Image 1 (spheres, rainbow, N blue to C red):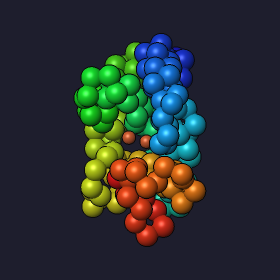
Image 2 (cartoon, helix red, strand yellow):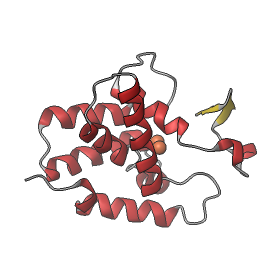
Image 3 (cartoon, rainbow, N blue to C red):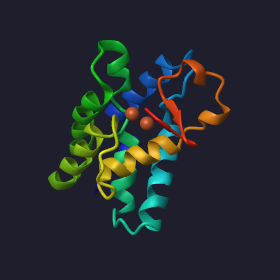
Length: 156
Ligand SMILES: [Fe+2]
Ligand SMILES: [Fe+2]
């Protein structure tokens, strides 16, 4: 029987730390609410566009995609890089199989930056959902935010 990601001690410790470090942050946070927003949006896109990703794979990737944030704040390691390493550990501890671990970690490692140009990849799906999860049009911090408003969405 697999352990739930949300019951995994490493996941809980990192998420607690992120939420603590972001308490005073004026920009978007990376707590559980954001992770679930990304999961739900990504799953809707996957269904609408028949991308064929399972709900389990999308939720695993979404829950873990920003798990490297605390390391980025504390050590300066980019969170996609740090996140892929933490995700590998969490997924292994939870009993996921190696093929799924590799797929999730690759998607996490490339969920930032420029569009990937491959509409159907898991990393691109998460990147899009991440972008669409933010309500920049109602944000008081948008003038100094590094996410630039483009069309109606936002781009990092
Ligand atoms: Fe991110
Ligand atoms: Fe995110």
